[in-house]
Length: 192
Image (tube, rainbow, N blue to C red; front, side):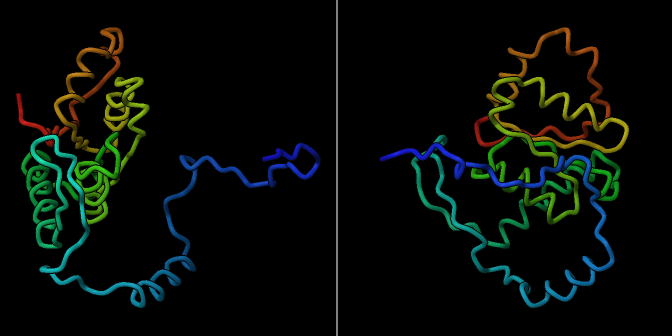
């Protein structure tokens, strides 16, 4: 193959925007469009139907394909909500934030990190698993930053908590505030 290196090799002038500065509020015209569009795209899900197919990794048994039903998915999310209600004194959903570094192709990242927030109306702060692996303290800082605005929930497997204990420098600890971290879930591995 040949590589073309001339004036035709120019990046388009794409507008770049920092997403952390964008407003989360929809304009009235966006709301009107969304309210007209959604009914044509959505319908009530039957609780007995399959929500998605998942191929297990085999970390706790033999790998296999699993059909995750809507009823099971909603029960899992409801259990998370009940856990948060007991520890958060039933705060409204907009006061809760799920902080996750788990990949969304993993069930804990998909259900715990993303779908639970979407269904329950929680805020969800997601970070790259690569960021966590390189700097586990970034996960703790993301949780700590919410101390004045939200109650935090986070989930990780054993190795995530263990890696954090081993690799977060003691000098970072005094700057962290976890009084608002109401639920730290562990899953996907036997608890040790």
